[in-house]
Structure formats: structure tokens, C-alpha cells
Length: 166
Image (cartoon, rainbow, N blue to C red; front, side):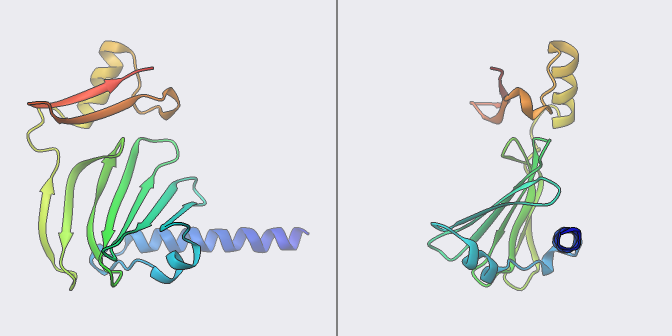
């Protein structure tokens, strides 16, 4: 039984290392594992948890494009990627409470960077500034996912943040 558990543990660590290596490499060469997705998907979607506890959601749509969202276990930060129908990386970037932040990169089907968009551009203060302001002025830690806080941002009609605290 101990030997079986050790084998299980080694296999899980190999998956985690493999996933980590895949995300650390030059992202232009990142390939979506279509066969694994098709093997595990239910109703066009495959959800799984990485060994570090992060939630991963993969979705395939009618255009044969694939989307992967990774949400950190204990953080509102995440990662968003889109892939072409051939599995090559199309778009990548970071998220905070599911909205896009920072610079997102866009690639063509050959892996060449064709565009980048800074989703923080135009905001008076950064996400870090927002975290500090909420902590210092309102004593609310918006990084604590257990508080079930909702944070959003957009143009309403100016660029603003919205925060809902239950």
C-alpha cells in the first residue's frame, strides 16, 4: 500500500512539474493538449485541479478554439489563455477576480507576437494600489478569497473599480 501511494505521489509530482515547465517555457511555443482535452471533456468543458490546488477550466467552442482559465487556490489572481484550433497559443495574460489585467499578448498561428494590450492603461491606480487602499482605509483585504468579495472594473462611463462586500 505504501508503495502504491509512493507511485501515486511521484506521478502527481511529475504532472505538476510537467505543467509548470509547460507554462514557464517561451509561451509562443505553448501547445494546448487537444487529445487530453477531448478525452476528459464533458459538454465541451474539462475542469481539473492542479497538485498545488489551482483550479483549471478548459473550454472548446464551436470555432474550434480553446480557452484555458487558471484560478489560484488562495488568490484572486489567475491566468487566461486562448489557443487556435491547431492547439497553438493565440492569447495569454493575467486576471484579477476574472477581469483582465496587465499586458495580454496576442500571437498569430506561427507563434509570432502580433499585438499586446495593456489592460491597466488609463486607470488612475494599479491593482496593488487598490489592495493597499482597501486595507488602509476600509480594513478589507481584497486578496482574501474566503471573504467572498466581488471586485470588478470597467468604464461606467469612466474607468473605475467596483467592489461588493457581503
